[in-house]
Image (tube, rainbow, N blue to C red; front, side):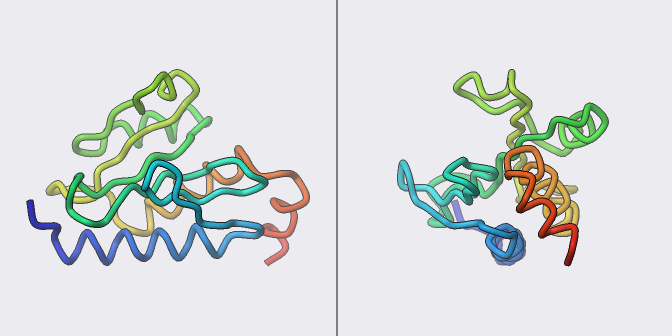
Length: 126
C-alpha cells in the first residue's frame, strides 16, 4: 500500500514538533519511532515504510479532547490495554484525517500529561 506524500509530510511535521518539545528524544523500540520525555513515551509515531498505515498514538486525559480525537476517521482507543488509560490511535491518511496542526496540539497535550513539571514550565516559558 503506497503511503501518500501528504500523509508523510504530515507525519514529518508532527515528528519534528514532538522532538522539539523540551527534553524530548526519539527512540525505536519494537522497530517503530516513539518520542519520549523523562524515559516515558508521549507519542507513538509508528513506521513510515508503508508496512502499516501512517498514524500516531497519543495520551489524551482531557475528556473533551479525547472524545474529539475519537471522531477522526479510523481513530480508536489504542490496543494492548492502553486505550483504558486514555491512549488514542489516530490515522493520518484517510479522507478527513486531522491536520498536522491539530495532531501537534494533541501531541503537546500528551506531552503535558507525561512530562515532569519543570519541562512543562520550560515549554510554557517559550
